[in-house]
Image 1 (cartoon, helix red, strand yellow):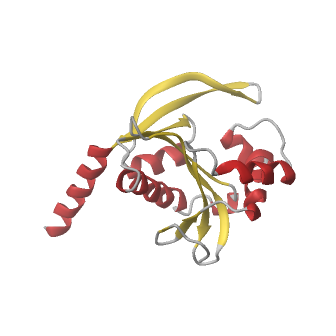
Image 2: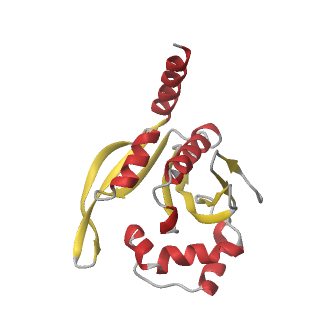
Length: 189
């Protein structure tokens, strides 16, 4: 493991490095990945390296590179956006840029790690996200961690001659800790 910040069972999260520029390019350029992230403009390595150099100057953005422990391969990005420590709120995003790594449970694990970091370290009260209504795999991963659907953004994004609805989902601090207490109680029985 290299420069790990948060360590899980199958993955770890580390700060974004210049060498991760290609992962960011995949978010923007890979046709298959781009469909899930709704990006429309291409980007090159030089642009991404410049963006990475400025990442940690933004006080309301906390990005991580997702790395598979077994292979030490970087497979995506997870981040908190618009971190507001006064209101104790952040917006969560995750993208696994390697389609061959989809469906292996990494998204659920990363989401769990990020939620724990948000509540236990950043002292957040609310973590929210937007997810396309047709992204059943993502919705399942978020619900597994404890996110709830709060609303629907109708025709929120346009892509390939079609408008897409998005769910607003969130998890609150007391829901997260309540779920953890329930798990402990069930384990004792």
